[in-house]
Structure formats: C-alpha cells, structure tokens
Length: 238
Length: 109
Image (tube, rainbow over all chains, first blue to last red; front, side, top):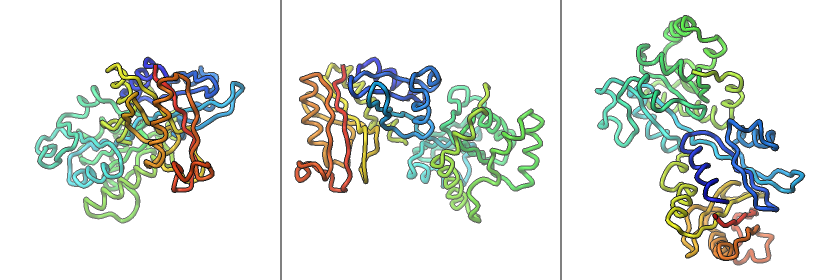
C-alpha cells in the first residue's frame, strides 16, 4: 500500500464517508473506491455489497483473489435535548460502543456538570448542523419536547437518511408533530420512518429505562442494517 | 465503532508513523474460518524495529506476524500468512480458539 492511498483513505474516514480498499492479492495492487464512486468500479456489485453489509472479505474475480476492505464511519448517536434521559443515555451509548453527542441550546441543561466528559453543543441545532451535519451513520433522538428545538433537526435527519430517527412524546404529541412535518412538505413515507413513541416497546417508564429502550432500538437499526434498505432512494439533497 | 476515531486508530497511526519517516508494514486479516478473534479487515501496523499497533488476533499470533512483517519491510514483497490449529506450527503460534485466519502482510511505500 502506498502512503498516498493511506492518506486518502484516512481523509474519507475523517469525513465520515464509507470507502472500500480493493487489493488484488496476486499482484498486491490497490485501489480506493469512495462510496460516491462505487458505480464506476469494475467490481461495483461486490464493493456495494461490502459497503451495505459492512463486512470485509475476499471475492473471486478474473484477476484472481481480491480482498475488499470495507471502512464504514463509526456509528454515532446524536441526542437533541440535554434532558434527564440523555444523562442516562450518555454513558450507556459509550459502553455499547457508539459515539455520542448532545445538542441543546438551553445552557442550563447542556452543562458540563450534568454531562461530565460528553460531547456537548449548547447551541441551536441549526447552527451545530451547519458545521457538523448528520449523515447516514448517525442515529438521531429528538427528546426535548419543544418543537422550536426538535423540528429542525428532525427534518434534517429525515432528509439525510439517518439510520435511526426517534422522537419522544405521546401519540397525541406525535400527531401534532406529524401535522407540522406535513405542512413543511415532508412526504408520508419519510414521516413513517420516525419511531414514536421513541424506543423499543418494553414498557419503559423511568429516564434510565427509556434510555435502555432507545439504545435497543438504535442497536437493532444498526445491526440489522435496516438503515441501508430504508435509506436507498430516499436520501435527497438538503 | 468508536475505536476507529480514538488514539487506537491503526490507520491513523500508520499514516503518522510513515510521516515520521519510519519504514512500515501493514498486516490485514483477509479471511477467517470458524471462531476467529478479529474479523476480516482488522489491521496491525509494524515498523522496522518491531513496534506495532492494532491486532489481527486476540494476541495469539501477533508475535509471528510482527517478525514476518520486519522481513517484508526489508524484502519489499508482500506475503500471505496462515494461522490455525490445523497448522503444523500450531503448538507454537496457533489460535487457541480453534479458528483459522489468513493475514496479508505488505510494505507501506
């Protein structure tokens, strides 16, 4: 492998874009296939399969054995809301192996004291997402109960095709939310992707239990790769 | 997941070491059978002095991979290594878990 390819690969990883390194094992020749360029690659089908499954492996080709190494961005959970549930979710998400970030413009909520060591953005989602947009490897949980804070990132998550999108609130609250999303021109198929009430249906009642339910849903979406089936053909430019 | 963005990031370490002018080899698990400790695609980066970062097994065969890698850095040609209980060297560097792995070792130029 040459250093230029290594640097190019690390650039894709840092930008949270999927890429596959294709190695011809007989010759040692490499090439980097970026997610956006898969269609043009001679092994497009195998490369796409590697990206969709997240699994690296050997493919038999006319040129002999070829190794496809799939590099997918690390999954992260973004919590819109520095609330009681997020305080429980922050350490749990970390233990389960996810990157975790919190966005909440209310500085009284989004404080270092309440979330020691967490990645906190005490700003409006509109401002944070300009710098750190969602991507397909992001799970978005909107849990402030406040439409002024929740709606923008929710719509952004739907347009991006985030692998999991959940929204806190009773069925009545969600009904009003659906009305607002429809008014904003979001298609019903997108709205149907929102898990509401948020989290696996395990009868969770306390903030800690709801955090477990949310994490269970996120893990299911991530591991069962519903993310890829769901987002294909749905992602649209923001 | 988060391991790819921490200081334990093998590929970032490789890039940094290369930038420091160290001669490197990259070892990659390309195939596994049975219960293998690290999945296909896992990396170990090795420099010419035998320093290494990352893993291709749970620590069972890293020693052997490192010494092969030092040879690869010198010779320049990639090598395919195979480890497993069926291997005649199993008593020395086999995988105690009973799996088998193939590890591709190449120089970083």
